Length: 259
Image (cartoon, rainbow, N blue to C red):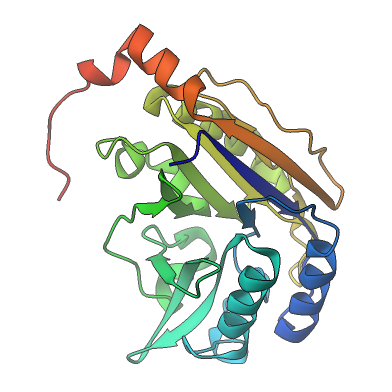
């Protein structure tokens, strides 16, 4: 069990529906990351942008981008995290992969598909919340629109880190900033949010606003809006333990079952 977890946020523009070029761009960005990083986090649909034409970019779990993530994890010695379009059993999924240097893969399929963009009509919704145990840290990965649903993220598993990858547009970025901070405070966990920048094919603008919040809701990252940037942030287990033991807010949560 590690007392610290070093996470790298890569806030980047995305090349529309071009997995090959996006893999190349992210590989180049990873080359500048120093040794000793534990987790590298990419945005939602990092290989394509937030496309509603999954047939143009969909891959299988043994496809080029998944293999690339395994190779990058091995090369960097860090877990690689991001979502991409996966085709499986006749369905398309907006699937987050947590790929460890060993090659082991944990998957989370986006639970809340974004009806405003018609995502629910072309992507199957996930059904399972996932907790990844990595280096003694319990990490709960989620995707973009999931952020609006606090019950789904509720910390009943005693996780340490709640992680969101996103293509969250600038027009509603205040909600992104506010809800990331709220999820940290209410769950007494670190919250990491990695969002893209730039314009997509539909001229939706993205400002990034990627961030890391501690258990008190303080932003401890250094990423600036509206620019491509990489930031390494160190998470401290002592910070979690100190405030959970002192304040004990999680002990007072209501008991109910999510169906």
